Image (cartoon, rainbow, N blue to C red; front, side, top):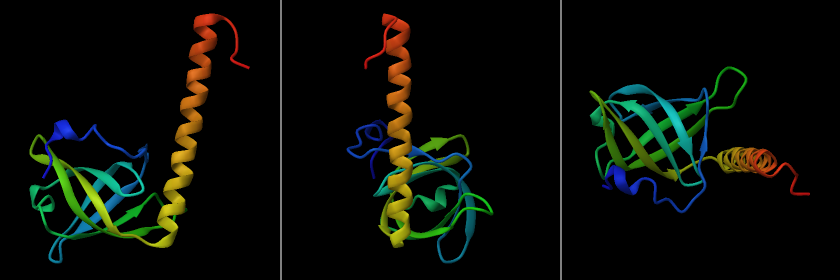
Length: 133
């Protein structure tokens, strides 16, 4: 399993999912965690017990964003973990996902890219006093 230093060497774009939670199950127990960020092939969950970070084990995860949002059931396996007090933050590879998951992530990645471009334009205007157009 990777250590926390390797976490930021990702090749894929990630996006934060505010207000999304995940119920993770190991076949015996279910535990709720917070979704920190996602990509097409992975997701990070915060504040999990150590038992949900066992290398080589597969877990079922249901990601939801509230009553008006669809739920997505995923099969995941841990890639890295980082201590967070008594709990751990865990990065997972997604082994199985429904077709709608990919579309959902691509839409969120697009929104993130647009926000970054808008923020860059605002910074450029503040620094130079002119727009990039």
